[in-house]
Length: 205
Image 1 (cartoon, rainbow, N blue to C red):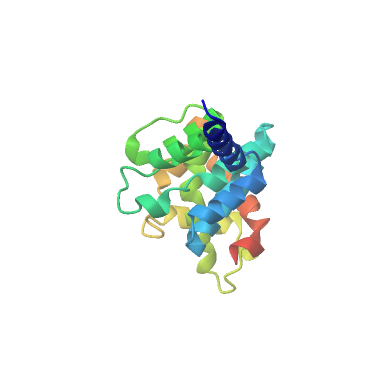
Image 2: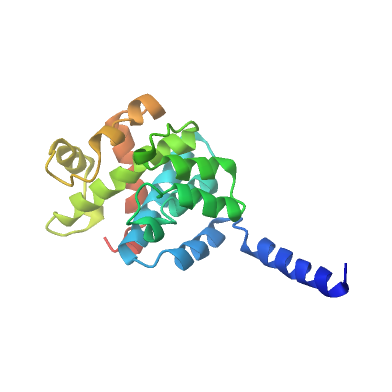
């Protein structure tokens, strides 16, 4: 093996090490590289904050859960016209970045189209959080102030009952918070709402 070959291998290894996502800061940088749509970035931020709050409640690692939320739609812009690939490609991307198996599983199973049952508590939480963030945003935007700080738990629960409101937010999946996480719908919505309210400026809400 020549010195030149060794040098090229070293460069590739250096790039691989640098590209590894090790913390929230790295996750945000990677998110910025892969996701350009402002509303999608905000959705990822919302999911990250909600996951962090749930991790605190369950006494899990808050940064790890937050990273799962931040990165769950990392492949969306590449797979938006191929929903059958969404989350599978994302999981592959995150595996290449050296993310933990727990985060990879959570990202992979959050897309219900695959019929993959989430196994870990983190994956179960992300599965239920994803559609709820959309319902909360929609509920905020119909308020006179359009400010999430003015959105109450009662507001969200009332909108939850309106089947024609924010149809894309699957009520069936959101309600899985009870069997999957042992949380009532009210408690679950409260945790996610508080998490999103804590980053209202980032969400422009």
